[in-house]
Image (cartoon, rainbow, N blue to C red; front, top):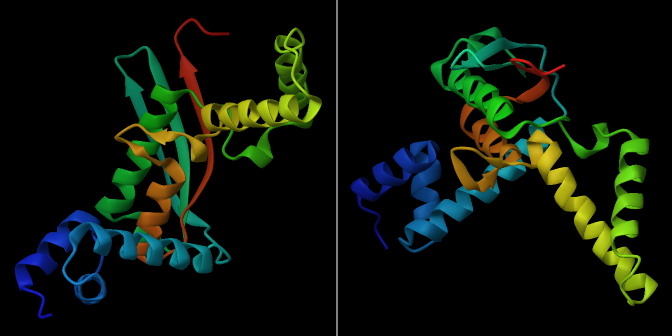
Length: 197
């Protein structure tokens, strides 16, 4: 099926992928726009996984201040200084700083959560369900699900993205890796709020 140039342009505007990639995705999807988007998303995840091994030592520190009451600083790294200066990269860093202010993450990824914090959470969940008469394996499954939800709340990469709740922050970063073509790493962040200790 020949793909009209207008469809390729539309897909490119939606995804930010290259023209050739959009054309190939539309051809694979027989002109189905949503299926083509999924093909590009899957390709982007594969590309992001390949690029994750590359060193990202360039980048920038971005600040966001919300109404003089809360602020965040994020360090977002990439592979080259050239990419760090692009508007697309700067916009991603700004969005991540907004995410820190709005969603209040405490860690970057689940592996960063101290073991004692995880153990305290598990203990609290088990105590909450002590009165329920459920088999031990069912209770453990519930505890694991609650722990997964806890990680999604406190780890920025697992949080729903503030501008699109259907994607996680990691999904957004992976999509940028696919479109920019370099590894991107959220190295660290800090959040300040007026009156908080």
